[in-house]
Length: 473
Image (cartoon, rainbow, N blue to C red):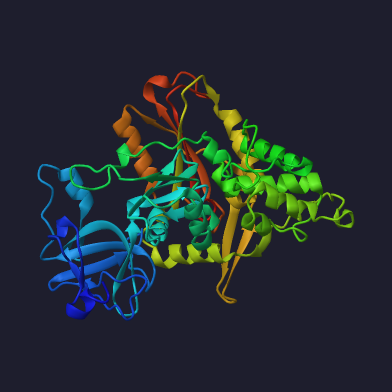
């Protein structure tokens, strides 16, 4: 293409959803500088672009955000679907903008670079993952014409690739050399052709379900030699950590391709430490992240000499109650005082639980919560600003001793319940960082269920509320 097309014509990259009348940005492709990826460009005449974060604030240069498009071509709404229209159109500074759902970055030349779909961003085992990034990595393989990566069962990443000339081993090796470990799919499914819907797009619902119990998941090497005695020991530990009943996991299969993930690897590492008695200085966990098979783990553990084995020591907590605030605490504290001064509820995190069986004693629940607050000091830590020194200090309080439930509320139906929960979520005065009040619990009782003041009944609701400075979902 570079030898024929680019010497005889110019290529323009046009971007835009149908809701903005097809095209809203443009970019002239330059094959001399744009060899890896190219921009979707700048807005067309009479169009405006905004790149905003999750709090509807403008992002910095090269920071990822959602693209909002305003201007002459923005549609008026979906026919007969006012609910969808309300979600898609946003009024900003008296201008109507379409919320594209596309994630972009803007470079120092004002050019937009497409990153993927916001609805394809997931959280897996505590890690935020942009599925589009994995798909783009795989599409760099020339023999792959299409790719879809999906999250399965909250535990696995599954990659579907359309190709007639590739195998799973090559796909895994390519991902291992270009992606961090937590973004490498557990299973690769190779199809000659993807199922398409009526609009010619990939029909994700018709993609075949992965078989996590298949032999290919357990043994990637059919000529795999039998495990030796030490490898059998490692194999047994793997099965215990993975809660697997399989009688054979290949010595060359990655821990992450048989159901393992970062949290389980930490458990595995601590199991190794307790059994083989070594320190993290001698064998840091990073080595086990880089080498992820039974045979590699066996070699690492066999390298421990008898003189390296340490006697387990009993550690005692330091009982520190005061110290300099962390960077994350400083950022959230300053954001709340300045950036979100008029919208402090942005940091309210809720966990809503419904009692579905039997009864629950309020007095016992209160004592249980007090025990949790006593153990987890971050749930009762205050932040103190020294304006003279310009420092922020964190200090553990004794709030667990005076913990009480918030004022009890009642509801008659789901509408009233949702309204109460919304009021809690948007309450700017729910917490106080200065006093260490960063956790609270509210009881919502259904009118018909109140029979005993101390006993919560079926269908009663518990709302646990945390300030983001102390808790992250």
